[in-house]
Length: 309
Image 1: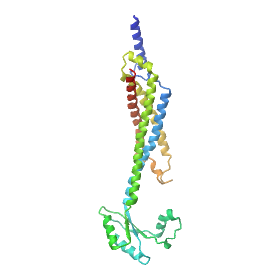
Image 2: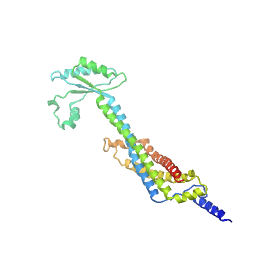
Image 3: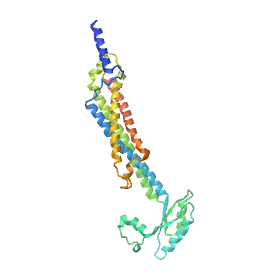
C-alpha cells in the first residue's frame, strides 16, 4: 500500500471515530466538558430562572390591568356636599335622581363607619366624622350598557347643585397605564434575556470552535463540509441550552410556588404567581432556550468556519 493511500485510510478512520457509526455527527468533535460546557449550562439556567419571573410579571400585570379596569368601571360614586342644614335634603334628592337613572343598580349611601374607614389611611383611626364637613358618599353600581355618565353629570349639576359624579376615570387611567407599562417592561425583559442568552451561547460556541481548530482542519482534509462540522456544535450546544434552561425553569417555578397566597398576605405581590393553566406557560422556556441555542450556535459556527478558511 502506498504512503498516500495509507494516510487517506487513517484520515477516514479518524473521521469514522469522530462521527461514530450511528451517524450522530459529532458528539465526539465537541468536548463534553470544560469551561464552555459549564458556561452554557450556567448561563442558560440563570437566564431561564430570570425569565420565569419576567414572564410572571408580564402575566400578572396584564391580569392586574384588566381587574382594575373592570372593577372601577362597574360602579360610580356621587359626592354630595352642602351646608349643614341642607345636607340631608340634598342627599335624598340625589338618591331619587339616581333611582330613576337608566342603566344603574340600587344606589347606596355609605354609612359613617365606612367613610371613616376610607379616610383612615390619611387621617388615622378614630376620626370624628360628625365634627368634620365630610360630604355624603353614594355608591351606585352600573347595571346596564345604557348608562350615560355624562348625561347624569349634567342632570346633577342642574337639579342638585353640590352633587359631583365621580366615574373613577381619574383613578382608573393611571392605574391601568402603570400596569400596562409594567407588562411592557416584563416583555422587554424577556427579549433582553433571550438576547443575553444568545450572546453567551455564541461566545461559548466560538471558544469551543477555537479550541478544536486542529480537529476542524483534519475534518476538512477528509472532505467534511462546514455545515457538517457546524451541526456537530449545534447539536451539542442546543442540548446544553435545553438542559440548563430546564433546570433554571424548575427552580424558578419552585420559587414562584413559595410566594404567599392571596388569602395569607394579599396585596400586589400575591398576583405575581401563575394561576391554573398559567403554570404550563413557563414550560415553553426550555423550548425557546433550545431554539435560541440552535440559531446562535449555527450562526457562530458558520461565521467562524468561514473566517478561518
